[in-house]
Image (cartoon, rainbow, N blue to C red; front, side):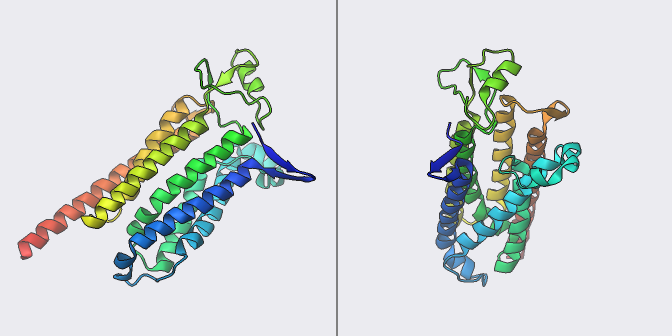
Length: 281
């Protein structure tokens, strides 16, 4: 793969380049969602700014990167506290769930600043979050940073001999030939997360014409991405810690359960509100 692009003395990491691209594209998606909801948002006195999508993605993206870095280094606390600074400021090693937590905290604060109900705000941000994650995974693919999967004989299997984490080492550890191919899991995630983004966008379109209770798109995001990440982890080489699951799988289970419980509560409150409204009329 191509961990770095070289322009004379300048070396640009492809992972960082794709993260920047992910933030830019997701900002356009978020801005488009704000624009199509403009009348609805103005009706609740939300700030009428033309570039709020870019501001939100900039702040949430930075918070997500910080959260992803901290979660990654704290997964191995002994190694981190033995030599913290190089790990904190390394260009490699980011954890999905840490990025989710960091970005979520930022979005909670930004929702309050924008005077938009939190669940509605999270609904708006969900498709853009999927798009950003999908494009960011292409950065993992290009850099060969070890996010690939187990050895495979499938025709679309890939080799990363010059990646940041060469497949030659992984294949030997698994008892396979050094030149074996592996599952290109970042590519799987790219297509899956784009499909989820399209589905969430379609849900938003339907809900604009037939309003539903806020939060259902966000709950679908939690459930669908949780299932997708859990399944991807089955064919990825990661240490197992919680009941035979990787850290990412455990986080995925939390995401799924949170989405299911929150969706059940939202629909229950919406149903009760509907019954009270019919009784009053």
